Image (cartoon, rainbow, N blue to C red; front, side, top):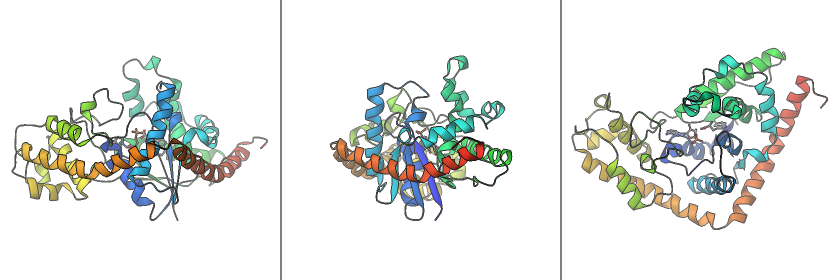
Length: 331
Ligand code: AMP
Ligand code: TRP
């Protein structure tokens, strides 16, 4: 069985972007793969996080992932900071990755913004730790949204350079698993920006915990253009907001844009938005209810995460110990 690893930051409530880009794949992969899913709190603090909030959001993320269908009987679900192998390998990878490689990372440029000098060093080496998350398990498949493609290419470069420098064939190639429809869900306010759980505007996203009223209101206010929906996907070119709503509909309905437009093409956005809001409410209501139920029992959530961390450690510790010997540590 191929080994899958993926991660998500506990930096807010997950959005339908996280769900469509990543989480729904994670749930499906459990049927066919050995799966590890980590809540990447070490990555979250590359931008300052209020400690109490970080703790609460880590538990919320665990509850949401379980509510979406991550099954702790089949998959290891854990907090990244609980498995020290990630940091140990992350340091070694800091010494493998070249500055020139990191300088090309678009996510760093986006997140650091104009004042790059003021970004944390952690934000800069973020992709090295992400590579270590995967390589610590020698995982070969990584389900992510489209925005992580560049980081996974870098992870492969790091693993290859490690193998080359130490004359081994130890780290396998990593294969990104990126879904076609809705791999990149855009902001509801601006069709050229990614929907993000850390966007200051709550109107820009649908959170997995939004209730029916909030969903209906956000979709009604979502930015669109005046033309009616086209009847074929080609008609969505140069219409990023329209494309985004159609992709969200397709992702949530489990079909593709062509099928959505065959049904809704030619209509105005009013009717389509009503249908989209209805679909979102129907899909998200059970997840929200289950998340609320799970959050009421913090002890249980902590137990699930502790169990997942123990499983993860059992896999990663021997791999990273071997790497440390390859590097020449007196391990
Ligand atoms: P993050 O929210 O940055 O921790 O991302 C967690 C996972 O969700 C990653 O696999 C991302 O690629 C994916 N993801 C985040 N935002 C989006 C989005 N707007 N559209 C599609 N996938 C996303
Ligand atoms: N960088 C990813 C994101 O922001 C999260 C992440 C951290 C990750 N480590 C990972 C994803 C390992 C896949 C595998 O979305």
